[in-house]
Amino acid sequence: MSRPELLARLAQAQAERSQAGLLRRLRRVDEADGVHIVVAGRRLLSFASNDYLGLAQHPRVREALVQAAARWGVGATAAHLLGGHRAGHEELEAALANWTGRERALLFSSGYVANIGVLGALLGADDLCVQDKLNHACLIDGARLSGAVLKRYVHNDVASAQRQLESAPGAAALLATDGVFSMDGDVAPLRELAALCREQGALLHVDDAHGLGVLGPDGAGSLAEAGLDQDAAPVLMATLGKALGTAGAFVAGSAALIDGLVQFARSHIYTTASPPALAAATRVALDIARFESWRRERLRTLIAHLRHGAQQRGLHLLASRTPIQPLLVGASEDALRWANGLEARGCYVPAIRPPTVAAGKARLRITLSALHTESQVEQLLDALAQVAA
Ligand SMILES: *Cc1c(COP(=O)(O)O)cnc(C)c1O
Image (cartoon, rainbow, N blue to C red; front, side):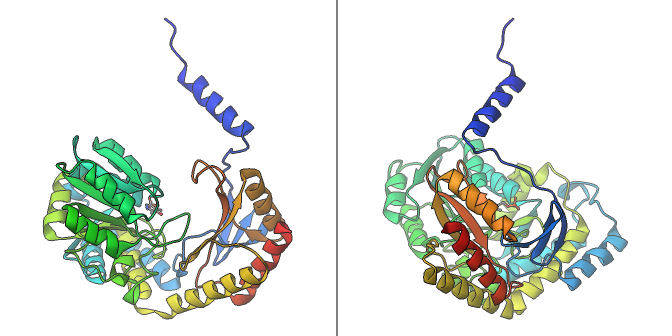
């Protein structure tokens, strides 16, 4: 019997990726202290985290985790439907629904599985799933797993989205988009997409992983900023591991949506509930994110500072008003060389290369946190000017 050997094939694929200079490398971080990390014995100023509001190590968030762990222990011990659904989970769900102006919310253990669960619950074979070309991988994977026909449209191009919806006028349809694009930092044309969905009878699903806590009144996200309520944007998903500084995700919307997900979202049903102490910590992080608006103001100031300084130095950042401020480099080797150059100068900024982004679009993904200072941004700008010279 001669079959292809799976492990040999995997090793071959890795060798090819290595030859193309596209090998991904795990870096061990030995310490994290605000915007600093220690890697290979060196303390680096990090512009890599999604902890936009600086809550991951906030004393009150830590304290909430410790207190709740003392009371509840660590594991939830079971799936939500089988005894794992604790008071802290439900309190957090209510607070998330209230913050985002939705009727209800449902927790998932991560954003990746939330999208898989929602798309799987809503879509089946013969349905149409229309997605932005630059959507996060888990939206794409969710559509694939659902068996629906997946059609992608040109990034942020509403006319292109319309053409894709019109390609199957009789099919039940869902349009999914990132609110803020994770590798580009730009914001989707949400009002136009919502109008298109209304016109076409399609369901709008917005992944606001990078918008929650950052955009909109009280940080309620990109949908709140666009003034789109639950009727206009019925499916809102966001993560807790970015601006909220903890981990997990949720979907918010009507009671009918949430009730349906409890029944049919397999990635919510067939998995252990996340630790109750994590929900308690997130509950505290939510209030800080929501009510300490100075953190968003700090971010705006730092973003303006970075963009102004980049322009003065002839560095071309992509058009973005969010804390994700990518510097387009182009060739993968150059992006890697620049990232290494920055590291030698004490700054950690990851190079993002294909297949995460399109070929020829390698970049440095710079992210800002409310904890950065102007002089740290200056340090980055000077280092960038040197490596780009
Ligand atoms: C990070 C991210 C996810 C995945 O969320 P996790 O909680 O990290 O699994 C989903 N969508 C977008 C747009 C993201 O940036």
